[in-house]
Length: 327
Image (cartoon, rainbow, N blue to C red; front, side, top):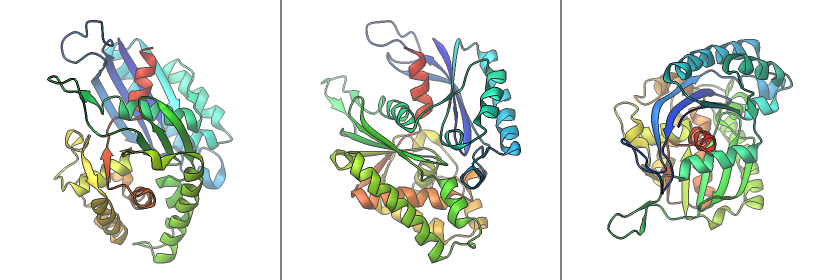
């Protein structure tokens, strides 16, 4: 079954067109194993849909125009590749916007389906499924699970919010909190200086720690054995930690970055100017101004909950959306 998943977040809009292999007991066909996705297209464009939403409570006309332009190109690919089912999921920025009906109408016109402005809890569930379904494999010789130990704490650091979900095979507890790389940059760092001075960074940390207080009170994060990190802030930190000459999703996916590496990369990023960050080989141009806040969120999570490393996943809510279409 060929499906199309679209994830529209605060910072980026992404597309996954994939063939879904049947689960065990059915023939998967050539090219992939049972119960897996085979990518046909996996694309991302930074559109900043959530630009200014934290301040104004509305989606800006320019931000909507950028988003719809990217979506039209995605719809052309969906038609070209013959996907038989499409699901469009929108997250933090559209949850917060008073004029989200404008977004809904535009998406309906482009894709012919109703966009789903999902709750933070559902966003977390989709992210958990996408991130963890491929983590544990059975050894062909022993049929013993191989891979990071569950329970997992899956952390999806987005532009407007961060999702925390704990589970083993399925999500058991989840929470979305309003700390994201775009939101915190706009709130504290945009006019603070370059690099950001200590008072501005202290304000960011205070917001993060307040959110983590709530997370710790509502989600059993300390029961988790493995921290799994998702989204562009995490993968960019991983690419820098690995010293990659360019962004390489295959090397980043399922890499393990130590707590010391997370702390080191975060310190380096926060000490850099905008121009110095832009010169980093793995840095997407659209992340240059928000990566400091994103890295700081990851850094405080690792410190707060005493994880020795983070397992980095390139598979996330997009994959969860695709799986949901497979039934």
